[in-house]
Image (cartoon, rainbow, N blue to C red; front, side, top):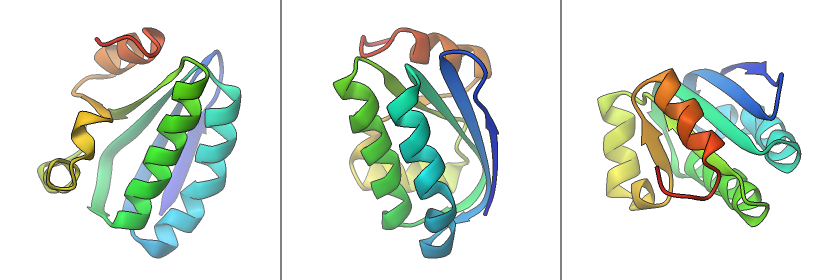
Length: 116
């Protein structure tokens, strides 16, 4: 799992590449926890994630809850069809907002806890 972070401003962007399995989840756990505690919004770019395991979902939900407690929001950017299916099947797509463009993601993250 490769993790690229742009944390300039109040909304951070985390671009993930690879498998978000147990080893990938270890790589993203600390950055997600740190950014969700410090920023008002977080955009997680999943466009290059090829696999999503339950441990990866757990870290995304944990970050979303941390942000939500402070009025912020976590947005998932452009997951592929396989990852979208996993999110939908697991029932978290109702809790985690999925955006299909960077501008939509930033706007949704800026809206905080309000629905887009």
